[in-house]
Amino acid sequence: MARHSHPHSHGHVHIGAEAGDRRLWWAVLVNVALTFVQVVAGILAGSLALVADGVHNLSDAVSLGIAYGARRIARRPSDELMTFGYVRAESIAALINYTTLIVIGVYLAYEAVARFFAPAEVEGWIVVWVAGVALAIDAVTALLTFSLAKTSQNVRAAFLHNLVDALGSVAVIVAGALILTFGWYIVDPIVTIGISAYILWMALTEIGSVIRLLMLGVPPEISVDELVDAIRKVDGVENVHHVHVWAIDEHRTSLEAHIVVPDALASDPKPIKDRIRELVRDRFGVSHMTLEVERASECHEGEHANIIGHQIGARH
Image (tube, rainbow, N blue to C red; front, side, top):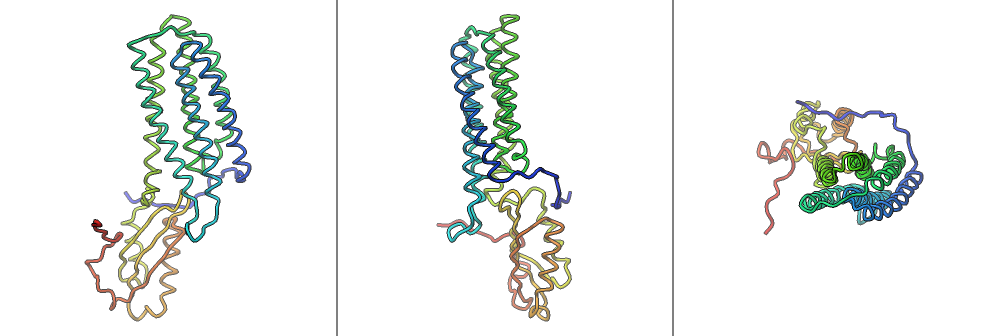
């Protein structure tokens, strides 16, 4: 099935850069405070699930701090060292945050399995009350970051940290209620495993798009075969090869290609290039293009040319 990239207007409420930074900073502060309360209460109550929720909440604070720093770095202008600017700082931050989520998920699963073999009594009331406070803080953090997460891969990773933690708090409250009602202490490690599984599922689902961007991958909504076919049909184009398509960041895609034109049109290729630019921008959403025009008589690669990319051999 053909894939397209179309410009859209999502009607997002625009939040200024400095206002967004302040939201993230407040989210960091409330999560650091909550982490301290959860871990201390979890130790006093003997609840692994509550300690697990607190540890993950610490990762929320760290992830929000990383997101905050990456946003500020990403706004630096391009220079002689970083000609595309520093926008990918946010993608690197997202990769760090998703990776830490995976590590945390594996660790919590390990601790939960160990608790199965050495169950411990849990103070249900402490668990319920502290998890309730945690859920309230998670809701505040979600409100602070929700709008920013819609348009930023970086903040979205931090937001998912927080969302998972909110669901973890709900699970911990359920576990505490079951312990108080039925004395089912085994539910504590069971809930911990559930939290761990959800963390891993969310992180593994989202990390692929970040890796794809950092690896200069084609945005998933663009079909390169369809793009090449569309360019070939532009009036005045004989062939196209050495096509590179990659995402600069979440919102900008770049195209580089060699365009073969008849010799008679090569002296003034601007109209052809303009038609290609308009087509690729409007139909595929590509905002940055570098087009190299070649005369048909001087293009010696012919059918042996690499249509997509360049053939890069191993370096020895």
